[in-house]
Length: 157
View 1 (tube, rainbow, N blue to C red):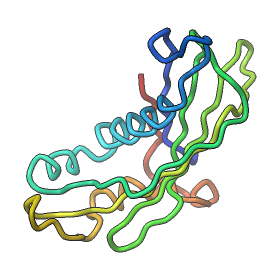
View 2 (view 1 turned 60 degrees about the vertical axis):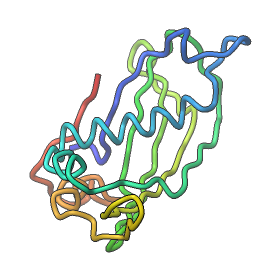
View 3 (view 1 turned 60 degrees about the horizontal axis):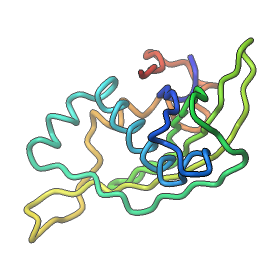
View 4 (view 1 turned 90 degrees about the vertical axis):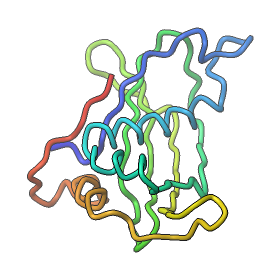
């Protein structure tokens, strides 16, 4: 089992700027997309909870760039669990360019911290990370590759 959840993305012209490289904000957008696809694939119960009153607030997000990517590069965005507290979750993301023949280039690394909240918008308060999310994230925790796991890693797109 791979120690990360994978979302695949084929870069399009809409992801690039006038110079032809990927506009930086798209890396952050792909973090969100990877997280959403993880919920859809691995924790659909959490999506039902979000439709009720669970809110996932993004507290912090960052990205460090190592190489430029352009239209029609194929990416693997690989999400891992870095930290899990009572009310917050921290993820790390590797952005890997996939090349013919199986070669891979790490082009960026990102991080994200979210808080679980409940309540109306005028009185939203921290809440425990739902058990369904904790369970779904367990195989992707740092060091999870060394532990036996019952689930398989996800593959998006």
